[in-house]
Image (cartoon, rainbow, N blue to C red; front, side, top):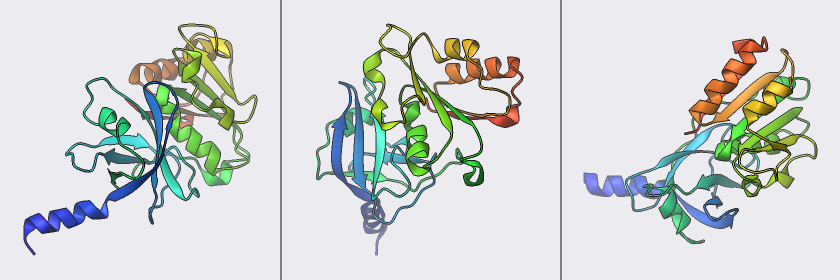
Length: 226
């Protein structure tokens, strides 16, 4: 077998069918794809790209570990190499998916006894959606920082009272301001474990706030999403 046919065979084994596309805003959507025999741990990410392209991007898995499909939450990036192409794909088409990787996870033994504070900006909410859906009984509070209330992606998927939408540009969320503003006014204690996912500026600012509040760095876990 020559190199060309071997490469083509490898690519085919990575192809996953698109089962559904849920458009949440004009620029953000959930891509549901065939899981095949792939397994993952909540918090891991996969590289996804168009079937005939050479580029892929990392996306935290949005769906639960036991769901019979894979989902990713995608925000279209203007002039991006992957997200605009993914947005224009159709149900029944295919995407390339690489094996899940990453260590941004929760200790299963302490799920129900340990207090978890999830802090996300934008589509950085993805791994936390997977955490919550994969681990019933999880004790958590989720702070989601977005610009406007319509970016509170599938907020009804979370238990009432456990998610706080922080809107920075208008007051349609649960809190008018950034997640950092909320944290300065509301302390969750030194014993909680804090999980951060989103842009690097948010993560650095939250780190500083938590350290000022006496939280050990051992209790702070971060995934820089973009």
